[in-house]
Image (cartoon, rainbow, N blue to C red; front, side, top):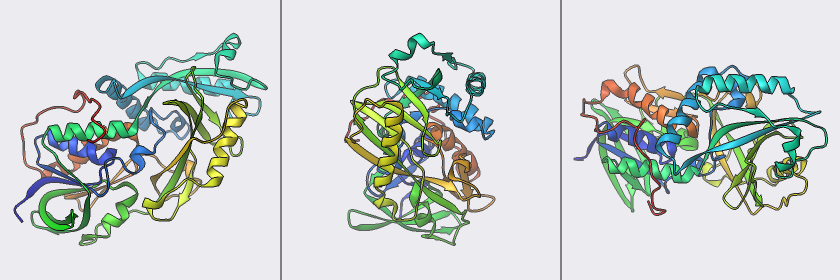
Length: 390
């Protein structure tokens, strides 16, 4: 066992490659293990949004919203080919849960927290016929504001490519078998191309998303755990185009927020929230989820084709808590193995905040890492699309 790494990351989703990039640009020796392919899980099955989380204002998560809005602007600046600003519309009807004045107040606070590019307007009635066939029966008001959209898989690959450029060793098809803590950090075993290999790392980052529990179960001594649930979110892609932008609506069945957005050559509608208890690798869209999303689309765009051309589902990791799923905290949790951590497990997190999460992981591990001359700063490091094979 001759290999000694400063940081070893398990999981090649957006948070895993984000940590690998952040560590590599700081000069650390980095190894990332991904069991199938980069972005194979939730990082290619999200709602494709880079946003501040407008809905979290209602739960008082002002810090989360402020940080997410700042990260949105950072990604728009460093990844203009991957993250683009998008107009969003909030239609309000007689039966809507919120009044127009409440939405206007929320958008005003959103603008204040954004500090830049937080403008919003109330669309005049004369402009309603330009909103992609949006249903107008009972429509009271429409507000337009701006957030951003991305190709989540392309963004994950771009971050991974950047990490490799700065020296990170990314091994795809590598299955984490176990780790044991010792005086120098962790001794790690993994399988790659039918061969079992060992290496030593000063620090270990569990960024396995829905598989974090399995990873923790293979580490000795058993590290602390935090109860969490896997929550399935499904999306459908239907024919047609949306020229006016995206729409942030309420589901007729339960008044949950749902997005209807342009996506490539179709219309993306999502997401659902359903507790999931199976194998994370076997997650699939349920018939009732398709029906739920079709009902949303029919309520707001009754003339559109609702036949799914594609459907996909991802899993979110949410801390277990009382109340409905919509009330679960959405801030990322960094679970450490000790007060002087050598192991960090990333629980939850949003696509928008991956870069900030990575910086916080390294800050928690700083005492265990050697001083290295930094090569770059991810706040200003340009991201460019990687080739599909990357």
